[in-house]
Length: 297
Ligand code: HSE
Image 1 (tube, rainbow, N blue to C red):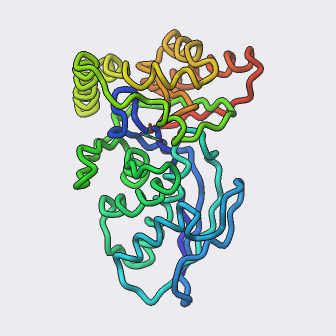
Image 2: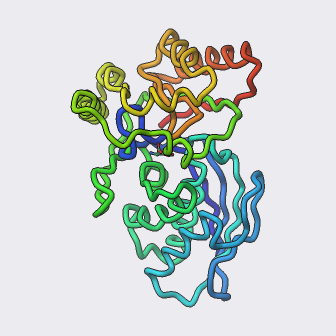
């Protein structure tokens, strides 16, 4: 028995929601085949499109799969084939797609002993291997779709928020690799009360905007004065890309996850495509190779 999966890319943080907010891109991602076998354990049998370790304990999909199998007794074993489209260190949840895909696939083949929300804790073990930190803001939207809010990570409390029907994302990836661990190490460990007040006002505004499908409110809330000023220095052309996104009708724009990808949200596909064109123009002018995705959320 086997299952073929689409493992979506994700955008974590969404400006104001560092480590707590994330969204799932409906049409960008990896593919994976998970196969049940009679030989116990987990084997990564094939990886296409990336130079990643095949050893189960060194592979994020392997580690996430082992975490699930520690919580569920079975005589079955599993083989995993991974077809990567999302580049490692791109900031759109490459490790999360593999971690979430592995646990989702195994759970299906086992007859769904766990809910999608329960799978998040296992997939987080893959994130821990990838970045040294078991954050859930990519694996949660990858497994649940739409938007997710990690209200608490210990104990895990995840809220799924449906995406407003006309919301689209444009994500551009300048072709450099930025390790999440490096992008975390540059951050200050304290924030001022003034910045914290601004930030939680925006998180509340964004969540309210999503529930009420208020696109203007969503746009007003997409700001980050804590993380973005520090991390954006690591991203070539950040200010120009963000500016062109706004000039071309973006509701908001910021760093995707830990970068270097930059996202913009917009109402309707036409706007999202227009932003993609404008962003491409900037990186072409800079002679910088890039990849771009437009996706419904
Ligand atoms: N919230 C995490 C970070 C996401 O920004 O470090 C990493 O993809």
